[in-house]
Image (tube, rainbow, N blue to C red; front, side, top):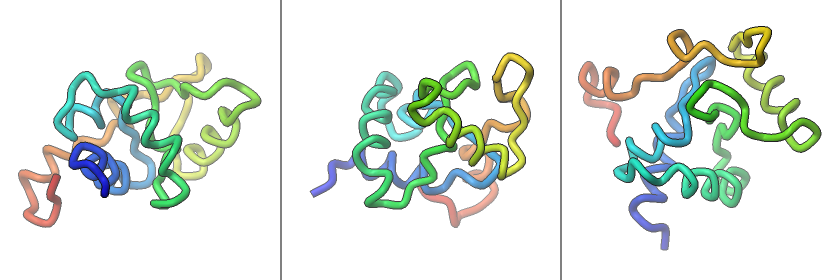
Length: 114
């Protein structure tokens, strides 16, 4: 049985559209635990394959990829770039452009439920 927080995390991550990102902390907060960023990381690590999550759309709170070079960084960056996400020379994503705002969307549509 999947716990309610985990289920919400899965739903939120599955809902991130192409070309947009969320931070680990924002996912956790939207799922009901503002201090659960590390739990989100563990959920991504253990469940991305099984649930076909767009794991690459979750980044850290400064707009950077958390994975180290040679251990997934290059793949995550390539996947994001293939969706149109741009990186600055300092390898940062502009969150003012690429941060997904699901609460704004939920207010406009009854189809999005968290």
